[in-house]
Length: 273
Length: 269
Picture 1 (cartoon, each protein chain N blue to C red):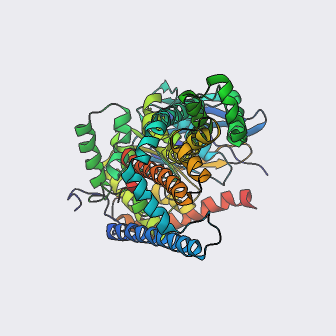
Picture 2 (picture 1 turned 30 degrees about the vertical axis):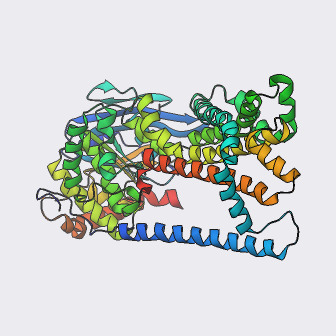
């Protein structure tokens, strides 16, 4: 394949990873994940059937309730309440978190101020503070949004910040030696390098946001999916309660999966298999 | 323990040195106020030749290379390229890194084209240029691969192609072959000599290997430690006209390696 004028002769294809190997390994990862789900659901079913407690129905009953609630429109009504604040909260968490983290990581002038604040928010028992939000925002959507942002944004910002900081000094020296402009260095070196940490933060932040919306709806405003959980618990329809929890888990999982594919597509093309 | 400090300009007169393209004058580096890494380093790098910076670890040879690259600012002294004092990195110099410094998320083609992209060269043109040098370093057929799919030797070929692609006059190589195994290193050294016969480049090559320095260099600058400066200049003057492999068998090659070892020994003991 090499050019006839080639001065250096190729060292005899020492290719470490073959393409076939990669794709087959990703397929087996998928099968293992499927097996993990099957195992977890199997155990749940088994434990549920032993009837330790009425409050722990088997997986099959929860699934039945899940489809029932989907058909009856209960989910639809609840998510109509929960989704708008969730989406706004997620948007602020993602855009705000990444912006703050990246800006602090790049500029480093505001580091002394932001980092301790973010660490405090990350470690504080925020669920204790959430009910207080009603004093400020009352019981409307704004409380939910603030709860989501408080739980999600610090995780996103801190990880983005750490990702930027962790850029290999050698790659930065390389960029500098080729006289790369600051903007190109950020665009071509720092952001792709930090993307792994940023997306790790986004995964945590999105999980935090989902916890935030449920907490807000449990603790402040009995509406939406949180209310669906509380209501079914109060009338002892535990199958429906768990179905509501499963629905929010599924939504979170789908969101995280979409983000994963976005990351691979945008930044880490070498992981696209 | 005294170190004979040779005047590099006078020493260079012994061989048929070309006009120096790069001059290092009285360069000193002091870290954090007290640690002296370099002290009064002088060096002339003749155009179109390979100059090896050789010395024990901690003698500041990589520091000196970084100063020449413009990545580090010396505490005193100056570096000039074609008579003009350098202010940071410039288009006249290109670096090859010890750890390759390839972007893991970019293909070989994109990595090799990086320097051109940073200079705002249009996509088509930079990819054509990159492809040319990929072929020249023997990586043809691997342009769509990612660094983690390549062996160490192939990664450094990509690093070399990236430095060649920006068409700088001076190539600065920081222990480029130290992260690959011995067999691969020999192959890379031979290929580098072959390549330099086509590409008219001035090379400054940092190494801690006496054999590598003597094998590759037209001029070996031996650096001393404390003070970190150019203690001695040796011009191997080996007959490189024939087969690159034959150089290692020349009696003068073996003698020179011994001679340099004798002069470096006391730093190690």
